[in-house]
Amino acid sequence: MGRRMLCALLAALLLAGLTACGGEAAKEPEEIPEEAEEELPQPQPEPAPCVPAGTNPLTGEPMEEIYEADRPVAVMFNNLKAAQPQLGISQADIIYEVPAEGGITRMLALYQSLEGVETLGSVRSTRPYYLELALAHDALLVHAGGSPEAYRDISAWGVDNMDGVNGGSDADIFWRDQDRRRTMGYEHSMVTSGEKILAYLAEDHFRRQHEAGYEEGLTFTEDGTPAGGTAAEHISLKFSYYKTGTFDYDAASGTYLAGQYGGPYTDGTGGAQVSAVNVLVLETSIYVNAGDSAGRMTAKLTGEGEGTFFCGGRSVPIRWSRADRYSPFVYTLEDGTPLALGRGRSYICIINPRDSTLTVS
Image (cartoon, rainbow, N blue to C red; front, side, top):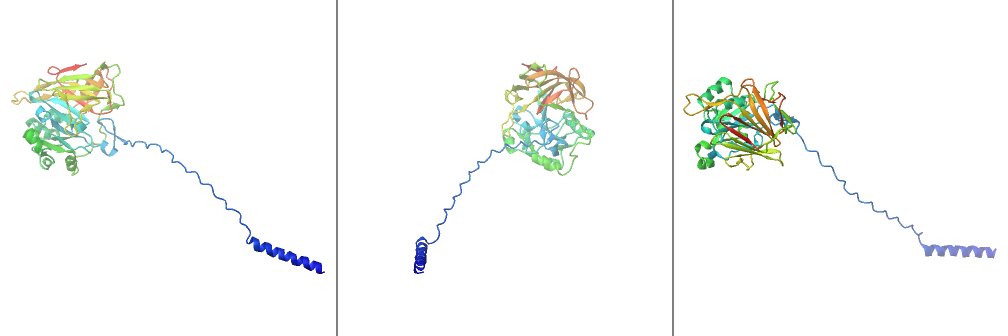
C-alpha cells in the first residue's frame, strides 16, 4: 500500500515538472506562401483604321456618308502668273483648266466637301463655258463677276451661284486679302474660304443635295493605269504662247505632279504641289466670239470629241461625250468601253488641238 502511494506521488511530481518546463505546446511553423508570378502584359493588336462608309463621287475615295450626296462647290480661280500662288487649289477633287481670252487660262476647281479647306483664291470672273462645267456636276458656283454673256446665262440656265462682285448677301463671303492687294494688285486680291461658304450655305439659300436619282457618271478603280497604254511619264501641254502646263509622273505617290510658268504648281496655303492621279486632255472647238473686243471665247462642251487619258505613267486615247449642258461628261475608250479612272483627284485640260500642243514622253 505504501509503495503504490509513493509511486503515484512520484508520477504526479514528474508530470508537474514536465508541464512547468514545456509551457505551451510548440506551434507548427507557418507555411510561407509562394509569390505569384507577375503576368506580363500581352501585346494588343493594332486597331483597324477607321474607313468612312461613304464614297466621294468626284474621286472614288472613302468619305463620310453625310457628304456624298451634297452638291459640290465649284470655285473660279485666277491663273495669271502675277496672281500666283493660288490658295486652296491643291485640295480640289477635280480641276478644270480651260483657255480664256488673251491666251490665259482659268481654273474651275470642284470640292465635294469644304470641311478643313481654308482660304480660296484669288477668285475671278466666270464665262458661259465655266457655267456649263459647273452644271455638269450640279455644282454651286463661286465667282467674282462675269462676262455679260455669263450673267445672262446664269439667269437663263438657273445656275446657283455666289458672286463677290455683283452679289447680294452672298458677297459677304468674300474679302480683299490685304497682303495680296499690296504685293499683287487689287484684281488679284479677292478671296473666300471654306468656312464662309459653308456658313452661307447653312442659311439654305440653295438646294444643298443632289435630287433623287442623280448620277455623277464617273467610274473608278483601284489602279486606273490603262492596259496596253503608251509610256507617259512626262506631259507638256502648251495651251498658248502665254501658258504651258506640265505633269510629271511620280511613282512613289502614284500621281502626276503639276507645273506651270517654269516651276512647280504649288498651293500658297502650306506649299503643297498640285497633283492628280488622273490627267485628261479633252479636245474640242474653242474660238473667239465674233465682235467681242475683249477677245472672250466660246468652248463647245456638248456633243462628243476625242481626248487622251493619263494614269500610272501611261496614256491611252479616249472619247468624251455630253448630251446637254446639264448632263455629266461620259468617258470611254476608243472601242466604247467605259473609262475607269484611278481613285483620286483628276486634272482635266480642255483645249483646241489647232491652237494647243500636247507633247508626251
